[in-house]
Image (cartoon, rainbow, N blue to C red):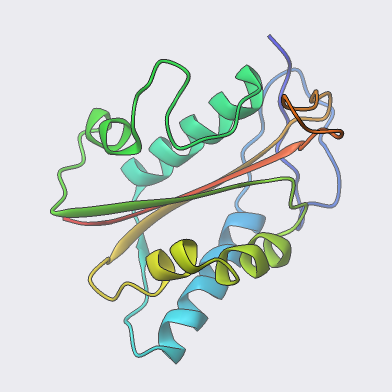
Length: 160
């Protein structure tokens, strides 16, 4: 299994530790940018939920370690199932994923530039979120790609 390291201090560089290191700088930046976009659209700010964060982190890590990119896990599991597995019960749920963007600004630019991702961010009915980014320093290119993604982003949204 490849070792993971989450980038600290605004994704400045990988941490040389034996296991994954989880830091909130990049996730906090994404949350601030998401809430700024939501405020501009008349939506209330999202609040973080630890169960949603755990679901997001697990999927980001799975994509990095198992070298795939998609909403469904390699075993076919969907994001709604990952969220339920954390004990979170919801009435509405959505997910944004991204790969290759090395900064919070980069992922936000891509998400806000994509109709589906933007719709999730600006859905005023969604009230809670979990955000994760995993940096995979020794990542391999995904099938059909000429370069390694290295950064895997997941944001889940929900309403209890």
